[in-house]
Image 1 (spheres, rainbow, N blue to C red):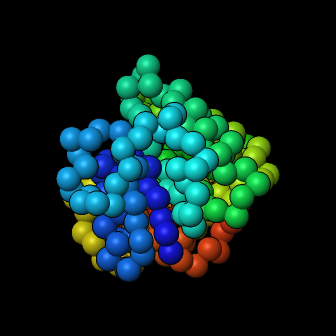
Image 2 (tube, helix red, strand yellow; image 1 turned 135 degrees about the vertical axis):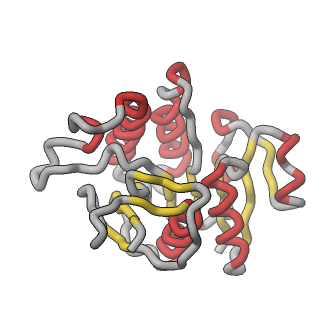
Length: 211
């Protein structure tokens, strides 16, 4: 397939780029910093997300949104990016696969309480989790977009082991047999590319964690 990865120079984006390319897909990195372009060779488009036009995304089967913003003054960009991409893709067959967060997962069967609303959730990460939750809420309103939002486990480990194994779950916070919620970036990338290839969860939020 032809896959575009937005913010491919970030930690998650680069691993998803490498995993997709390793499987033989035609992958293009969309980044705004030309100084980071060399690592992608000729498979790169230098473009700020907010300067993207529909023609830039034409021809791609899947667009991966690996955008991340962490500074307090930038957190609102999570919803802005979702809005921008959803408007561009609304009514089209192309798929939008979003790298999400764990904080927006539900901890009640009624889906009345999210993880970031619980007492033990770290205060430092609450604003980010809330911003990602708002982005997901906005994404759900675009009925004409073929989206999948993929939340990692609570502990998202960049240097974690690549095992090739993971557990797939849904909207609710889940732990494994060791009562842990963690996954490596490498295994998350595997799960995300599996979803690209299998297309099992259209217009759904799913979550992945280590076995």
